[in-house]
Length: 374
Figure 1 (tube, rainbow, N blue to C red):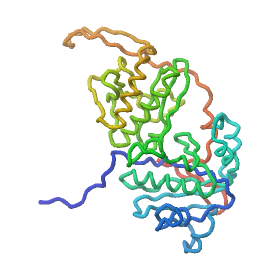
Figure 2 (cartoon, rainbow, N blue to C red):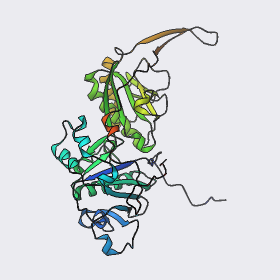
Figure 3 (spheres, rainbow, N blue to C red):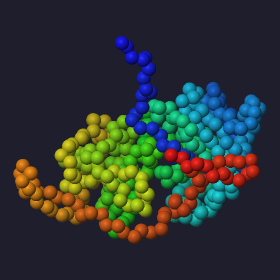
Figure 4 (spheres, rainbow, N blue to C red):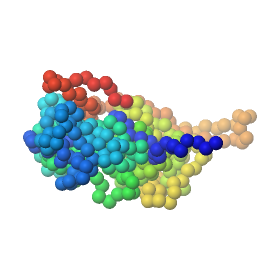
């Protein structure tokens, strides 16, 4: 007997977290119309799709009027991806641009970006209501709508998860690592100097309900290699090669092993994390080498650079196993356990949150208290 001719939609092995949102800080007092953001034909450079106010008549005349405070729905042409955009004033959102301008986050930034943030007039928050199971089309549509809104309103796109402020022309990477997706559009590699060395970590994989990655005990000169290594690894993950504990990546002579990490509660706050342990600190005998691709070659190259100093930055505890259950005597080398260190107060980004994750809108003009998003 033949089965039903139905099948589940093909996915890359992950989805899009409901906690993923972008904030557009607009410096114009008069916003574009919702029809300029998205319309069925993509007229005037708009995203191709359908966009309407969440409340109201939805007649054509209303679609051509400047956007006002309230909620809007933006859907892709095939209706597989549906976004919600909430528009409100910076005062209602409780956002003070001067907090950013006077913080270390503004140092070394593009002057145009700082000017636009300082002139913030209106805030729009963009979230997923549903998304294409294939994920990649949904991501491009999502970023495209954010870019369109920021472009027409002389705005800046704020990505709270990856802790970045971007001018609209910098949201998409110009030369993509892969036609399907470029992880650099969604993720950033951060560095933090600690008493035991430089800490490199990603921010952005959690947008897909996937673990972030971190490497500990690096030297200052490791930054470039560490960034290349983490970007290449995360690119491979977004193309469907999901990480499991014990997986190894890099050159055969310099393999880094993925193990449960995220022991810094201040930084991760319960977010799943893989720590990439350098050779000599691994515990699994299983070796997984990536296919010969651009991402794999980058991982190999970067891991070789990191290995030059990896063994000089680790403390070791040797132990000898000669129990009857062991087939032979085994020398095991394990790293000293992590030691909790009192940390500085939360970084500026955590104190300067542009907009709460989701803001409900009431006719009274007051923010409601929406249910938490999963």
